[in-house]
View 1 (spheres, rainbow, N blue to C red):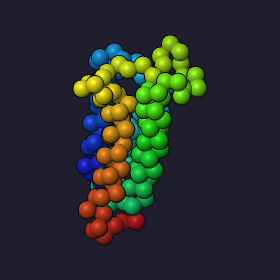
View 2 (cartoon, rainbow, N blue to C red):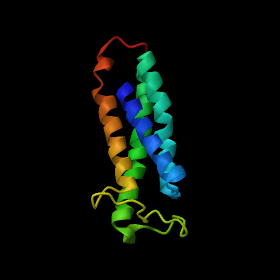
View 3 (cartoon, rainbow, N blue to C red):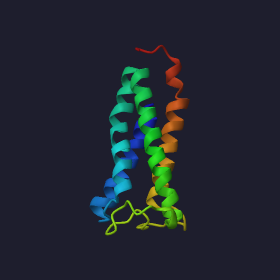
Length: 133
């Protein structure tokens, strides 16, 4: 779970770099993904330190919620015709600020981060040790 907290911290640092240093304004769906990712650093960090199943479950649910938003973001970024027009027209969720290696966009990095966090929380070998909760 501690490794998952570090992954979430890296994703948080990356998203802050894109918006604060590179100057890419986050779209509406990016904000929702941030709302899910940023608290994971604290929640999963506490889950690891306290060996808390409750905090681990909360982190897992938060990451799954973020993954759902991120999956939708990836869908509308890939297929813009699917978008219902709910996003801000001045900062659309379909705009690609980054496209590394031809496919690594910011939403794809987010979905990869959420999947990695979820996998690490589920597969954490430390959870086999006696838990506090």
